[in-house]
Amino acid sequence: MGNTKTWAIMVIVLTTFVTALAQVFLKKGASALGTGTLTFSLVLGLVFYGFGAALFFIALKGGEVSVLVPFLATTYVWVALLGKGVFGESVSLFTWLGIFLVVLGIVLVGKGGTV
Image (tube, rainbow, N blue to C red):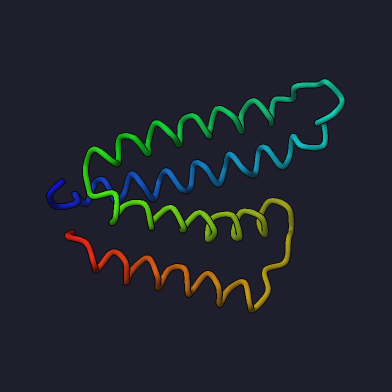
């Protein structure tokens, strides 16, 4: 596929943020599951997932899958931050350590590809 473009990496990181937002909205709407009610949060979550998928396809056009796909792991970072900010969830020291290791892994895998 050739070299991975910088814009493709930026789009893949945006993809992870959009899908993390989708997860937040789905969690907000999950309370209505089983009631037969389709809430705005559930619909918005599904829309964000669809938008994230479209962004993912665009990013793949600009780079190597072996470089871009590891960036999807940054979703863990966004979800931890959004979970804390939106739901007041606690983020333990072990979670922060795990996030650090995920980011380190992305950097190491990314160095293996051509950027």
